[in-house]
Length: 520
Image (cartoon, rainbow, N blue to C red; front, side, top):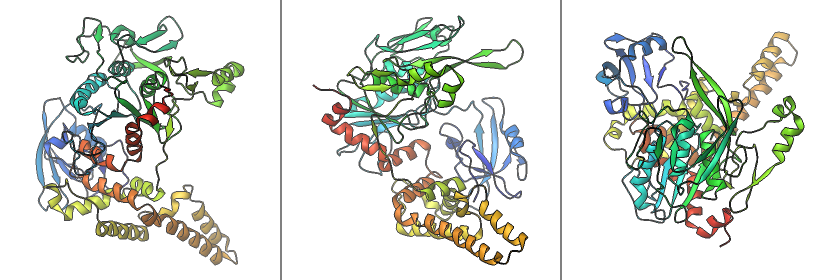
């Protein structure tokens, strides 16, 4: 199977006789033009890309925004090559790839469907990044679902690595009364003085903007020359809020989560004990020559309670003033309701959920086994392109996938035994036994082979013990060839353990208030 790095849109296949396979097709760009995951790009503007380098493909695709590029591709299961024109544009990943109302019905995954059931009235928003327009995106998302979020709202910050601090302040302002204290930043030197942040009117000069002329606006955020006025949209006294985090929640995401936690406006739920702990701010300073810039780390974030988000590692304590840093770690701060929160440890969750995991599923994902099977499956089931809303992986498809994995393992394409042996020590032992011509060389090789076989056998047992995990991942990979990212996210919520726990807490107001330390 082909190795699929998560950050690339196109991937070259193993054979020099192949083109480039699409592993991601974004809504608003290539997806809208008709390109799908699994398609094999053969020509760009009538120039063959078979056997050429990835750099050359990028050169051919890149051009002036607004111009069009012709792509010729082959879709698995269809003999004839197809051609489409894609308009070049500056590609921006959406801040919010999905916003909708949770439903008990897994077939109702679109943003407009609101199904009856115990989850009706709970909104869900996935915030993927804090781009310059993230505040406006959040405002629009809240307005689109506000009428139906009577019970509560889930704000998903998992895997959000941060971005613009201004966007985090903007989003916090949508949930809080005007002029609420949100925290501060402290730096060194006169170039970037210490700052404090409050909800409502945002002074853009605080965040490095000269004016609001090029800053995104909305009807709720009318801007004078140097500011943005943001009005509260959600009343947290009437709406239960749950924030989802993990160890990859970082920077501006942590600042926002810290605001909710310190002011006791939302419960933090995570699969990890705490977030990353990257509480530092950076700004780019243009260089006098050329188009280069200097990225300067200039301050640390502090949440409303006064604690610092930036994690303090033991190595850092040894390099700096040991006693001072140790004292900082031992400081205890308090939320509005008197709950203790720790300093310099990221944002520690209020409630931890440990979803069941599968090592095998992770290996099948990183090795490309899911993708390869899904591509082949879609080539044999073209009907999926006409209607995939009610598609589910049944036992036959699941067992076919199991057989596919076992076959690929026997062919040597997967090598599951190397999952616990990334330094190839077992191969070295076998080679050493052969080269040294020891008397028990055959016994050593046999013992190593038995160990490898046992590792593979134990991993493959996940097909029985972790069936739901593997089935859900397989289903997502198959549907990724047909559906846009937003619809995949919506479908995946029905099997998301953190989302399920968030729903339970939102619906149990007594438990929700208990986690926030509310006594009345």
